[in-house]
Image (cartoon, rainbow, N blue to C red):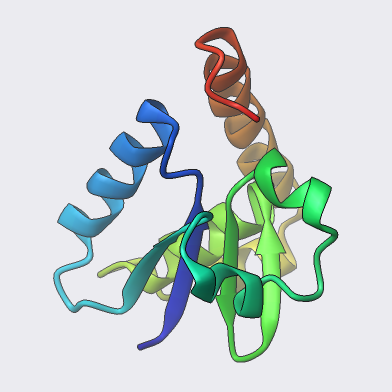
Length: 116
């Protein structure tokens, strides 16, 4: 398993996004873990409990990324996306765009009152 995607399983939009990621993850490199799963406590030990539901989180090799940086990690694990994290590291506008995209998603999530 390459990475864990910790998401709000009670949010319909988050669950839909997880389903899209799983459909694109033909190599099975991403393991989705809902926040309510006891495994999420271990995976997110470095994140304050009240911040855990504020966004999705990606855990890989003991490192945790959230929001736009997490999006970059997820895209990097998908087929044809392996170069995305390196690209984002060398091109700050790419990282900024991923954060804007995540913020848009989060705004829709909030409008649907999914966030806790």
